[in-house]
Image 1 (cartoon, rainbow, N blue to C red):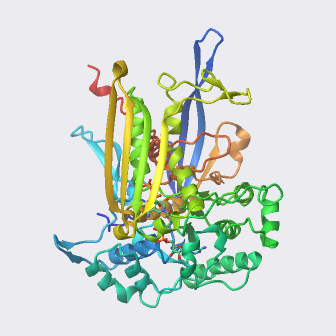
Image 2 (image 1 turned 180 degrees about the horizontal axis):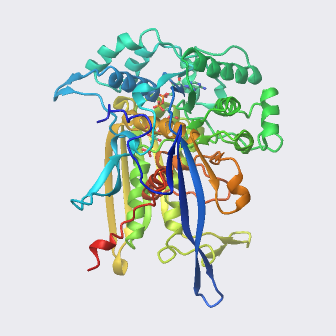
Image 3 (image 1 turned 135 degrees about the vertical axis):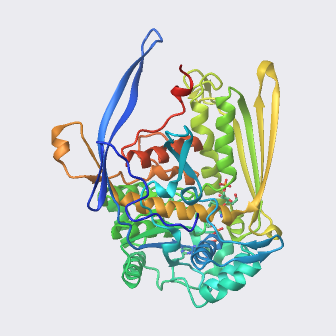
Length: 539
Ligand code: NAI
Ligand code: DG6
């Protein structure tokens, strides 16, 4: 199933007045239903139902899609290319358990399903793969390339990563030999000093403007050389330190472009890649935790109406945490502390052993339970209920929150096989206590790689979707427009989801998945199927 492609135009046909199939696309009307809630002085809530009407247009031709990875020669980069090649060429390999076939397990798009409705004859739920909901690029069809500061050829880089089984690596070597990542940019201050010996494949010079122009040229060249209709650029290079946000430097798009021209020290490599992608009109996704998207970069994406998404792949520990914390809080149990330890031995762990880079990761790993905590004011006192005085006599308003620590250690011996240990310490009924421990062990890059495919497939899909409001006549006559620049719909795959300024970050994994599912259904004019299952509850 993972190798199957959907037919051109999609596998699903909706029969409804609100969904129309026309030359080149699907046009679907969708009503977004919600509620406005106002709390009165008497403490009562007034709820008004709301309805907003939209029309979506999805271009059905996928075209040739390229994926350019920044950090192609790293553990994730090599595993992405190797997985793609093994699937494309159907390379099976021997393990001690027998013959292993390639697959895309762990990809929510390729290996998970959505309930589409009910079979009227049997009354049973009908599920379809997410990849069949709308026409999406198959990962076997991607053209993959990219940059790395390490010039090691891809076969050797795959061997260096020590992620995949030897019998697979052996068969992939001929496919990856001679493939060298494009030279990249290296500003030593942004990644750990212990990475310096990798940096032997660099775009010459120190001028950030010419770096920007070279990267833009690389994107264009990749597109022409491979006859591509679209490209997605994705950062899976080392975690950088945070960039300082400085007025006049990176606070507006104009200042950011000026700072690149002046080669300002505080412009990071990842921001240069993001700016290059925005200026080339291609989506840019940040798979690492640093603040690549400084305010000037977000403004630039808005101005150019291109797509950006981030930050930091949510592969294992954080994914489980967002599920467990939500389960506990929604069960009315109060987590008092969450203590997370990781150790890993790959190059990512080596880079993160440096304090500033660790700090970027600590920030992205720490915010994940915030929205669940703030949603339950029965368990956690809110800032208005909980005020305290600091040593200067100032009143501090801070909501109650579980203690939350994140520790990461580099243990070279364990390689890519990351160990994540979490303790959840919670309050139960009548002052009781509960301790839950989780020990999670697996190859980190085998979790991150399917996320990279998902992010690419969904980002490309979103470039083909347009919408318009139907709520006033003027807008009805307007042209369809693209979604807002920040792709918060990709939150399911990202630890610290970047969202539209002024809107709330959703960390709950279930809510993130529902949003994605609901969006795909909306593009087909389908209402979100709910779990009320009224027919099973009435006579
Ligand atoms: P890695 O260290 O094996 O690979 C990173 C690659 O980036 C290296 O080959 C390095 O030479 C290259 N690089 C560094 N700076 C560069 C630049 N300016 N331009 C081009 N290439 C550059 O790391 P890995 O394991 O592949 O992870 C990549 C990133 O993804 C890290 O930031 C990591 O924190 C993040 N991440 C990884 C997850 C996982 O499960 N593997 C999950 C969440 C995030
Ligand atoms: C140590 O935590 C290394 C990191 O790069 C993580 O492996 C990565 O961020 C994945 O984190 P998580 O919390 O999603 O498993």
